[in-house]
Figure 1 (cartoon, rainbow, N blue to C red):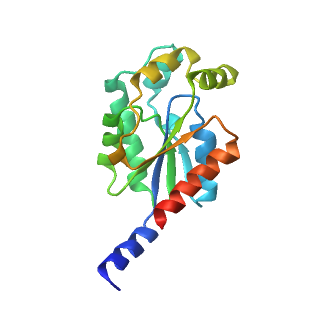
Figure 2 (figure 1 turned 135 degrees about the horizontal axis):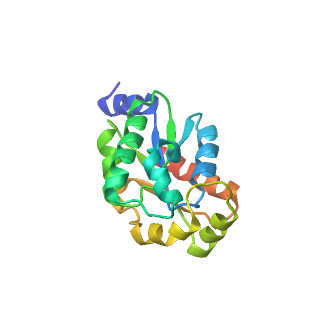
Length: 180
């Protein structure tokens, strides 16, 4: 087997690691769960990895600081690094430094799937959402912090302002195109 073919083979059997990213209310959990099913992997909601102090702060309507986020982002990266199968984690990963922090904890490539949408669409979703600790009032701070992934970040960007099945199909098509 050639070196290139051997490398492709080892990458093909290596667990794939994904972060479904975007502002609160963009659909990370729904998209992540559906993709995990399609990719025969598992989905982990990054919200479940937040320290209790972060959840309490957000529930009180206070945006997190970078210092608040570092332990959480380290946990996201560690969770990905420990995966023995394909894993997708929903994590806002709003800034490049956050994505870099996750990548640093993982020994291998991490694919970011950035879910984007108009502020009005996402605000309406947040208003309709019940029982989540993240209040709609913090959406503005998330958009203010958002740094879209750059060309070198290996990210797939998908507009959520389309039917759910079309969002999933667009992501699958982008992943399949990359494998060619």
